[in-house]
Length: 178
Image 1 (cartoon, rainbow, N blue to C red):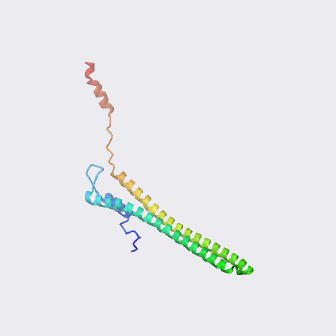
Image 2 (cartoon, rainbow, N blue to C red):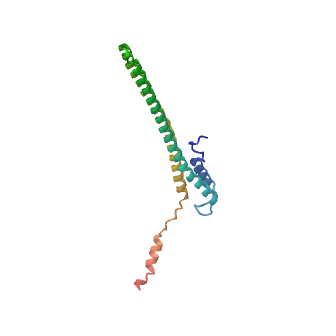
Image 3 (spheres, helix red, strand yellow):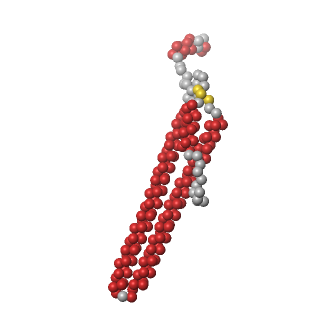
């Protein structure tokens, strides 16, 4: 493994899906919407998922750093090509025909170097964009999984039911009327 390459950790999406599976498979408590799950197992998986998110963010930063390095190398290559073109042009200054040829060649080299640098830059940006798009999908799935898990964990208490017959009876025994 390269020194700059991020180490592999469990995928947060897979961990969250395992949490959902545990919740789906959990035994329901009698006469309740609640379920019984192993707190330690559920908590450990949830912590692993939480710990994995910063790692995925670190991987995204690493990809951005790699993109910058590729762009920097492309710039250095372009500078080297420009310098090579300049040196070549200076050598050709001796004669008029050679000067015209040198200018034309240096312009071609410069254009070629700029096209090459732009192509490298576009490739690097496309690569990083694809990686960030994949990361965005992972984060979206993670957010959806977390939201579904939270919704399943919420317990809704039944609202008290007011019976009209009870309300009439309470008027019958009103002590203020005595």
